[in-house]
Length: 190
Ligand SMILES: [Fe+2]
Image (cartoon, rainbow, N blue to C red; front, side, top):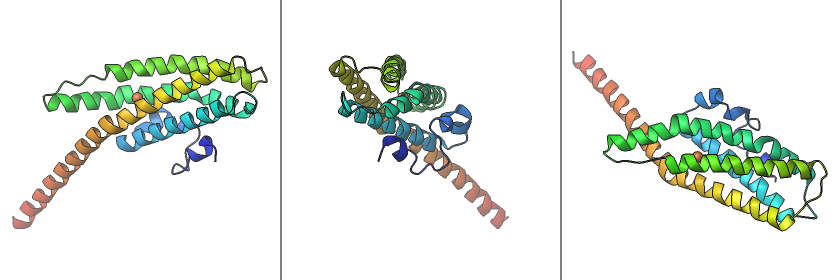
């Protein structure tokens, strides 16, 4: 099964990158939105790894064109949501606990990932359009460096950022439900 087919499992209404628009992500619960973003990133990493494994002779031109068309726009959309919604919430949550947490490193990784993705896109387009696979070993190292780094980035956010926001969301919900329960008790006793 290719990564592009696998990535839509569980998101039947989801096209390649349209579901990463700020409007569509904004309609989802933040944890659900982050899960979708991470699933998309992980699926793209798998597609790139498949290409790296096929270099140079067995590389599939259509796979190169497919990932080239979505890699950078998907990252840009995901990063915009993370930086406008997720990171501020994460920093605010830490501040409320008297902790100082900076997302500067994660934001810097977003920039370097986008620059890296732009470089890879140019090569993938060239191969996808029938060009020769020049310096296949170097290109393979580039691909592996990119998707290894992206997987580490996703793993860090999964391990630290998402659980913190999930716990805060749950505690907020419990507080709201507790308040409404108290109000019902007061109404019942009044
Ligand atoms: Fe991120």
